[in-house]
Length: 444
Image 1 (cartoon, one colour):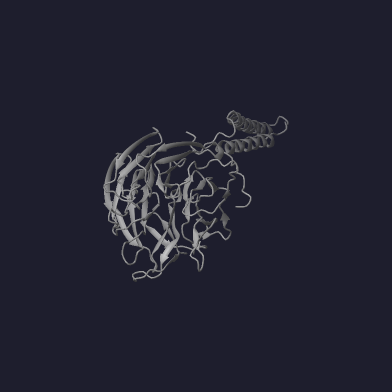
Image 2 (spheres, rainbow, N blue to C red):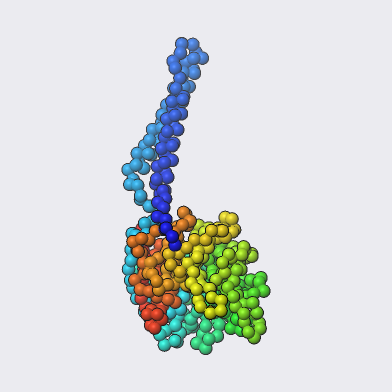
């Protein structure tokens, strides 16, 4: 991706407060100096003026003393003491491993509270499972649970910090499902709700107070679904649809902090309802907002299959994917990265590049970073995008990096700082794996 930029060291909250205190102290001293007056005669008006000046001087000096005391207290705190929950230096992220209870691919992953949940999927023999592996970051312990029905190609996400959603999927005879299994992190119990339209592989966009379950595979002649179900914090479901004549299986990106999401890229069916489908990469973009808003957005600048993406701080990043060569049908992977800014509601006119082309990469948010991993057999390195500086961080030390190359794996991030990659296919798809790789960027 050309010459990578080095990690930008942003001032911490303590450093900002220190700078502010210095400015306050200097201003107070300046005010004290300007308030000083020379002595005068003995007339009553002059005595009164002198008394007022002395009182003003004393007040200003007290202000300066307080500011200087605050400055000294802040100077006693070491610089670099981060107030964020994420370690800024990526080389200091800690790596560890674990194992799922069952090896599988096509797992649905979600995080809620201090938990990561890895649900369902496909076993080595091709059958589906109902197993849910749950990791608690606080206790560092694993437990297992079960979905109400075994299935694969499940959409996963969360509503607020309480509910994890596992929506739709294919059952054992390859029928799309309307079932949504809901895990309540407060009660540690399961319940279920239903989508209006059954579908597999729906995309979930978390908007904070609600979550949109968008699109998916419909299992009929239309093949792709335009259905949208919003699930709110009371687990009520509001149903609508995308207003496009061409159903799209897109990429879902959520920025929970701004309660905004994008549904973009992916592919669309140009001949819905007909006997023969006509699929092509989609340039459609839909902007979602809480609680149930959706509007057409700007055209996606470089339509392609298999891209991945994530969002934070109002910056939506889409990278990788592939196109098919004309005439040969050969899959051509890309390293292209497109960026959408929520502030301008526009895609950037200047794309960036990943370190290597990636197809169906896993993409997660860790603090202010957006992390691309997997999706290639060329590198185990992570591509890490800094949303504050809007550029990629140099990873010349090849750390952090994956230990095992894998495809069709699942990823999620707990508390915005512990990135977990689980399951998938290894050895070029010949075997499934139960291995879990954890990248811990948490301060505490």
